[in-house]
Length: 226
Image (cartoon, rainbow, N blue to C red; front, side, top):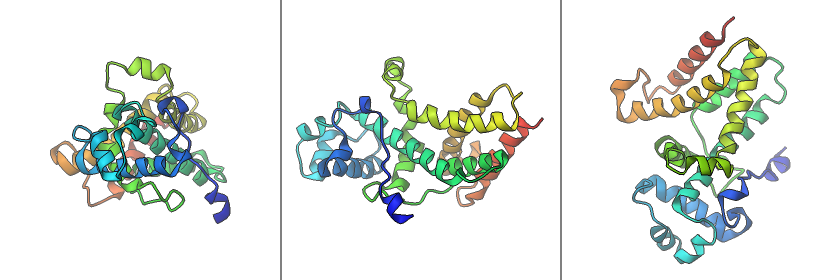
């Protein structure tokens, strides 16, 4: 099993980058350090100049991989969604019950993240913090329609559709499976953010991780009950 997992690679649509960062040690270093730096500084204060200085390389080297920090952000968030999908597929592969698979999906969307040893150059814990704080900036732009045509958001849409299909297994007559899944996926992040920074907007306690999963599970199953 360990040898099988060692061969797993999370792939991001090639239109997001100029050169695949997974194809070289330098590219992996760019990804590894960019996650830590964006987590530390925030997207607004993050620049390729600061990233180059932290790595000990040139801005020109980074621009060979990514056109802008926007496309770098899209890459990181796409990698995260693809990683969640990989975890979902792995966790549900032998689960016959659609209800149990849906509960697993909600757990993965809302659960506490731990670093995955199969991807040593990625801090998934730091990456989740970036997704919570910055992911909306990937698509709340004037260029969103163009980015969408280029396939920038396929990983997110594919994960949501996979979960939506489980809901349709449980209740084929439920009219809003796609809307429900995207609402839950976004709510998972917003509720964490609110609990940490705007606590009057949520009943979720950041120190009680199970609360978020319980809330989202209750929300989903009450919405789709026949």
